[in-house]
Length: 128
Image (tube, rainbow, N blue to C red; front, top):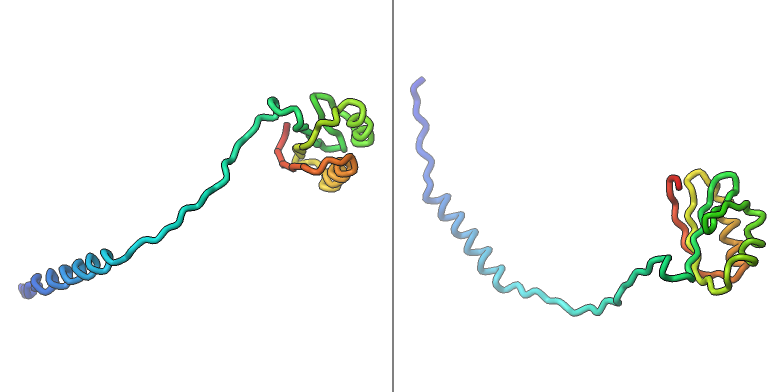
């Protein structure tokens, strides 16, 4: 039971590793990376407080809407919009409560389109 294992020859192993390194270094030096320049547009962000043309509408369950801190019902939205909101509103951000129904959101979007507002963003939030 005292058999000794024969020694592992290291020289052929080192020779193989050196050949692999040589192959990798030679082939990698001939690879040329090609690239081209891309001109990206400049992005910008605006705060809704600095741009009065953005109106934020919050949709709640039971067809209630919060605009400018005031809660109104959907049936009064068109009247409120025509009486209180200036004509310079070009963009509307709709924040929909998770509990609000999708049909309610669709109704509000259709009403805004009827009022000639084309730029409408929809965002979903948990609660407000």
